[in-house]
Each structure stands twice: as C-alpha cells, then as structure tokens.
Image 1 (cartoon, rainbow, N blue to C red):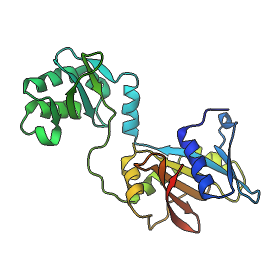
Image 2 (cartoon, rainbow, N blue to C red):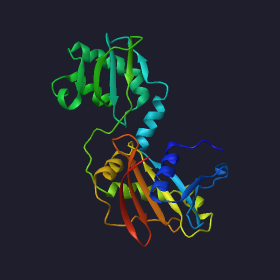
Image 3 (cartoon, rainbow, N blue to C red):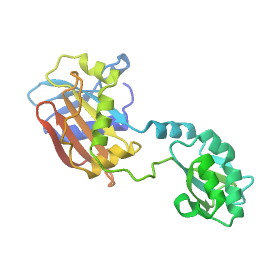
Amino acid sequence: MPKQKESERIAKSILESVLRGSTLTYRDRQANGEYDYDLCYPDGVRVPVEVTESADFQIESAVGALKGRRFVKACECSRDWSVLPLPYARMNTVRERVDQYLAAIEREGLGRFCVPIHASAFPSVRKIFDDLRIYYGYATVWNPPGRIYIDQPIHVAMTRVDSCHVLRAIENEASKLDNKSKLAAVAAPERHLFVYLHWRNYPAWVALLGSNIPSDPPALPAEITDVWAAAPDRSKNVFAVWRFTAGQGWRDLGRITV
C-alpha cells in the first residue's frame, strides 16, 4: 500500500468527523491512477474521494531548491546569520552570493535588518534585496559556527482577505486532469474533491481562516459534485473547513479538531 500523505490523513479525520457514521477506506491501488478513498455512508452507499493539496508554486520550487542545502559557509562575513528570502528569489544565486552581501551589511554596523526599515538608510540592505530578494536577516550563533542559514521563503506582503482566493484555489485543483479523471472513472451518485489549502498558498489559506464563505459557487467540472476546502488553523490540529455541494451551495463547517 502506498504511504499516505498528511493531507490524506487529515481528510479522513475531517470527513468522518462531519459525516457521522461514515467511514473512509484508503485504496491500495493508487499506483494505477485511482482515487484516494472510498467514502461509505451508513446506508451502504459508496462514493469516491480524491485528496489534493493547494500550494504556491514559487514557494514549492524554492523549498525544493533548498532541500538539504539550507546552510552555506560564512567566509567573508564575520558572524553567523539567518536570512529570509522571498519566494521568487533565485536560491542558487542566494547560496553563492549571500556571504559577501552580509559582509557588506556587517561593515555598515548592522546585526539585524528588515528591508522596509533599513533599506532607505543602508545601501547594503537595499542591495541584498535588489539583487538577492532577501527581505530580513539577523546575526546569530550556530553550532558548529561559521554558517549562514537560508530560511524557508514566505509571502511577506499584505494580502487582502477575500474568499475569491479560496474559489481560485478550488477551481485550479478541480480543473486538473488527473483529479477529474480519477473521479470520473467510477459511477457514483457523488464524487468528492478534498482540497487541503497549505499555508504556502497564503492568500487562500488566510482567506479560509478569516473570511466568510463565498457568495458565488465554484466553477466545477461535471466529474465533481462535492468540494471540501480545509486549512490548518493557528492552533495545533485544528482546521477551518468549508463544503460546497452542487445544488445546495456552500456551508461553513467551522473549526474541526482532528
């Protein structure tokens, strides 16, 4: 049996919590391109559930580029550092050049910098942002010393909290050919798509946590009748959950603990 993803385990917990008496059974033939779960209702009706994750491509690419390569050697700068790049930073360039840029920041007497605060007064901060897209950094102590840590990129710009971001994320996942084909392969009265909104898709994640359900329905293909959108809350093991059912509309299911 293929190893379950965290999002798949979360989907099972949420659906079984909401749909009392129902069970989700993980399928062991996914290598053949089949859907993730059989959802069995108490009356014996069985319907398919496919689980997918929505995340920001730029951040995913950046995280992939840094995998196992978060530290670089500090040669020109005299202190250990931790820096925060933006998602669209070129990580190989950051790794190659961050040491010399931090040395310039040290020469200007800074042990911590944030672009909105320091860029106008310190040319070295302006340059590390313009050239490397590094937004924030601070001197620290690593064990062993003599290293610079490149933190996981995040979105730092303010984002309008709007449910349209959730709609776009759902529609993007629903339109993917593999999600549609898996659900279309079985004749069933319902076909469910569970969309896990990762915090790496920041606009959709923060919108699901902080906005009201949309007034408009998502544009769904015929292969999908029900959509679940879930985002991890700031409290551990708590998720904000919305559900859309064709012909019935949206429901805000509130916070669910799994």
